Length: 415
Image 1 (cartoon, rainbow, N blue to C red):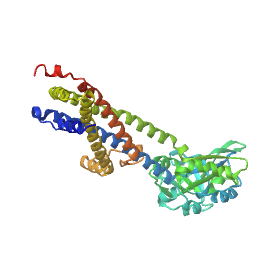
Image 2 (image 1 turned 180 degrees about the vertical axis):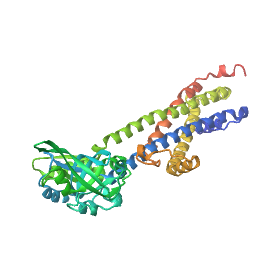
Image 3 (image 1 turned 60 degrees about the vertical axis):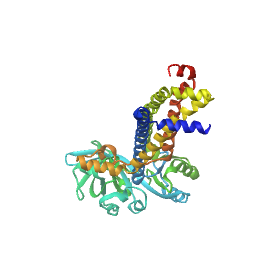
Image 4 (image 1 turned 135 degrees about the horizontal axis):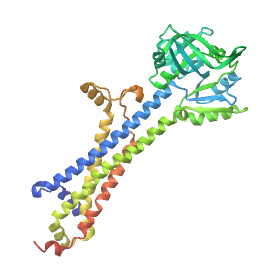
């Protein structure tokens, strides 16, 4: 590429001929491309922020992984617990008993999961112990038949701290008069609020021994709930832990399997939004075609003069390709900068808009959160910029090729 090709190409973009109409069209192409790239980055950042926020909330209230016996109960759980705790990367391993049950209070009856825990160990583990709104896990005394309800579950049962609920186990007791449901009255000693409606509505905590007597699990437990120093490695680590235990085998599960539908739906939505919004970028990129065609049409005489002075078709093609590349670079860079800036301050902007309009855009009962998080990933920025620039480069091919094919004699015939 010669210096004059760069000089002429950049000068045409600053053209003031015909009242600067060509420069105005080029500026609009840059603005359209900037808007498309910025919009795409903001949407992808919101999807990333939503995924990160959802993942952090899930990891704050649930175990990273679980180990259960193949028969449904883990009998020698104390020995297994000691061995699991010595495994590198495991920060806690706590026993639990969990089963579905019906909870009744007055005329209200709700189905939920009842989980038996050891309050002292649960306090040190990652879970719901850090999200109690009323009461404490220490109030779950052995034999006291206390229960801690989720906030939404307590609201649906219309019961508060100090009230009582009847827990009905799914298995019944055979009597001479028939099968009688097993039930026990529990006193509400606490209420937790995790911010995740799934847990606040569908989970209740009781003391481990009380759960064993209610569900008749004997000395065994359902399994062990594990927490890892790096939750993202939970799927691989829990399998290594199970293999290191040997024995008859164990059933393992991790948080990515429990909430796979959440993250799969987010990934699918993110991919679809990328494809849909990329069309906006494509429309803005192909506006460059119209811009360069207008420049080529206006500069027919200049092209003919360049050809008569010795410029070849390749030199003319590069002269106009430079203009399209510069428009693409300017629009892509400006869009990336504006999109990143908007994403970094999106929560403040949305909060201000909500106060101005007196409304709330996100319902926590539906979206699990009330604010609009955003997180910019460098990989997304790079991917958007590369695709936008390639579209712009592709859009310059036809106008530049057409300029290179200009015949000097035809262009100067009527001059």
